[in-house]
Image (cartoon, rainbow over all chains, first blue to last red; front, side):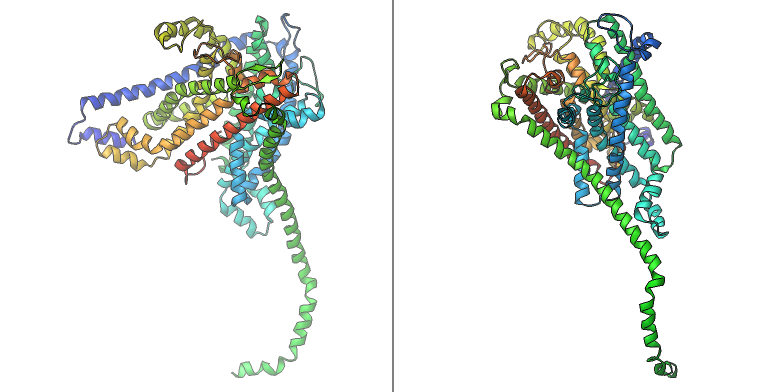
Length: 295
Length: 344
């Protein structure tokens, strides 16, 4: 593209470009650069503040203790970190197999009207606000269990993972060359075996990328947890009880009037973003080394 | 001829033998036949499991609609359509009107679009058309990094950085210079509609920018070359050859951003002020549909309160479905025929 620009400009095609057009061109380039700067400023400011306020607030107690009563300094969010791990574990257990299954359906059996419907539904579900998903999880889990629970939060997050994972899995499976499937059929390998051990295997790194991105996306979700897991200031490892979660604790601490809790909110935010960024970075690293499935 | 005539007398002989063989063959053939059928059976099982997974996606949508409709019936019967035109929200006396929330959601989202659209399109144009190829990758990575930050962290940052900045510097300045429009009236609290709009804008920029970038990239190269060949400057080439062709897709991206802004909860809840008032001033606190769900759902006082909240959720759901469908169709008309991209 730039080559074309240069050759034409250097030749100065017969009517020379007028001063005002040239000025507009430069001005618009300037405007575009300005927009980039304006967009990068909040990014830098957010990460800068996270590091600045978060690192100074992060300590061993924060990672190993449970919250102190309001107003007292010290304490930590260990129960929230473990609670988040439990909720995300439930979400992954439910969401990953279903999402990958739906993705296999779309890629291998979904070249028809039903497949198109499922595909479109997945895209639409991707845009449903997470708080609405929370209401549904409340209705189908909390109302039956009669109380808030880690399970309800896991179900809510799983519902958010399924559409994302199914679409990325489909895209990755479709990248696997047809010839590979045909070679397997030619060897007499049944279709299910081909799908699982040949196609899915070849696309592993791409599928994992999708899974990790979905994971990273729901890991920071707060809204669907507000009235499903509710939060808990104490240890809870039971799936049918209200459970603390890191994003919920950040939210509650940020709203609180206590300086020490504000400090802990920043530390919690830093831990959360590190979790998310490291999972994305792991994905990028894996993809670089991975097979063509993720190309 | 003789050759063919020769076997003929024999034929009556072997024929019965052959028939006997045919009857006898099932034994040797049995093995491959059985294998094939067991493969068929496992294939059928596998396929039905996989189809069930696919149907689960449809089931999820049906479940969402069913639960939302079922649980909001009470409120719908009590208030009817007046629910969305009434502006009184009074859980104690069980009188519910959702207008302030609808207004807050629309206003904050529109404000976000006004801020985010020029910035996102600018970034997308810069990355696809202007910047050195070496910068292209890192730049889009950084913009997409914005999408990876959880909503609650945006909210945290907004409370402690953006809001003080607004109340100390930006809002007094706006009140002095643009106060006469009455859109920048009142005490500069920092917390309010303006803060919500700005934080939403930052959150939807990566969506609009990445869709726009995608759409710009599928504009055929010869469109650019044609514009340049006519003597266009680079900006004229972008305007005539690129942006005009990508219009529908860019609008799709913008609508997708709108869909995200409408449903965004945490960051908005943390800075909008959460007071169900309708005010012309952007400095005034407001309330959105998603925020009222976040604040009141877990502590809803009675069935009718809960039902009213679910009805707000249903309305939010329907609006985002319509908005997203529209956006997908628009983006699809532009990128059709191109391989699906892997933005997430």
